[in-house]
Image 1 (tube, rainbow, N blue to C red):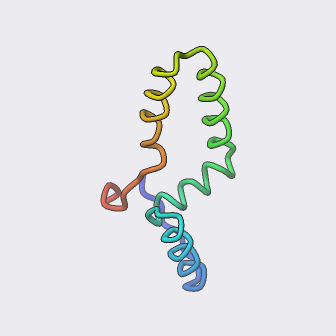
Image 2 (tube, rainbow, N blue to C red):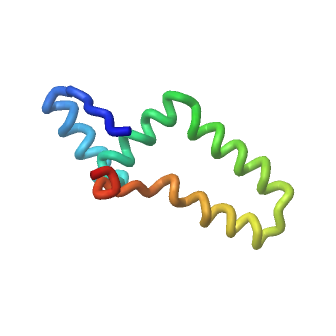
Length: 79
């Protein structure tokens, strides 16, 4: 579901600069911030760490690769 935010140009510029430094799109940066505020990032990372204890090194590597998609969101995907 699309969401529209009204923010000041100064804040938009701050988001643009911070997302560029992080190597992420503005959308990915904002979604990550929301996830962190909601506690979703911490829970996902904690769950992966807990599961990794039961996995072989190969399975753990595959899991890390599989969840990397959560860190990559392209603005073009939201059109």
